[in-house]
Length: 321
Image: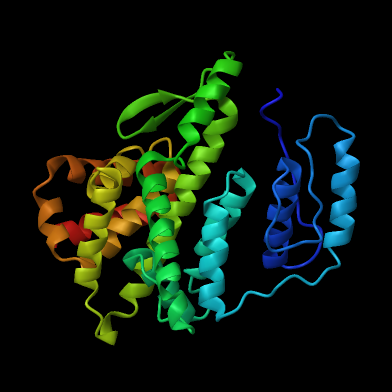
């Protein structure tokens, strides 16, 4: 309609930082917003017809060869800026890229261990490491807190903040679907084109959590008090989403029969938390529902998911011993 339109922009060449810079400048041009950092980008009227595409293409041809301003600071600061920009975007592709960037940055198989450690603590603490320029520290910390809060909401609700409005709009547009998805123990009806996006975002957020726990579990001898870090992490999650992360993990394990990948990651997160956060063991031992969900995961994994079977059995043994 006149108030909403769809824009699909994909990277053809250049690195991700340059792409993000050009991407946002193009969107500003389409919306008729003057970009403060580039005077060479012309003002554009709101896009009313397809003839404006020619003007956009002309902007692309001028922008791509231009050397954009390089991100100052070290790699960690560059990742913080990139992930925050991507996750706060209204574009699904950008959000997905931000989650994937943090997945890779916290994965010790894809990055150096010191960098992965900093990435894990960025998520678990919601704070940035010391900035190269002290005056940038507050801005970096604020962005880390917002990154943490966004991932909290994905873990708890399966979607980004504001997506409910979009989902309701799609619901009003399309009535010919019968797709259901379980969130928080309740059955919700989602448009078919939205269901895969929800599951994918939740799986990536859970992977970031698991990667971070794996990094700190390998770094327990460093002297950092990870038990206190995790205690604060649980409190921050509860304050942000009004939901206990422990209950969310148990729900994910309980739903493993139709979301096995997420169930596997939830079992792995619980197993790692047992060694990093000792109070959790007593809570699991006294929770009959949680033990029943773990047993259910063992049976589901035995039939068709070997990773789920392995992790659920290790979690069950960790609870019993």
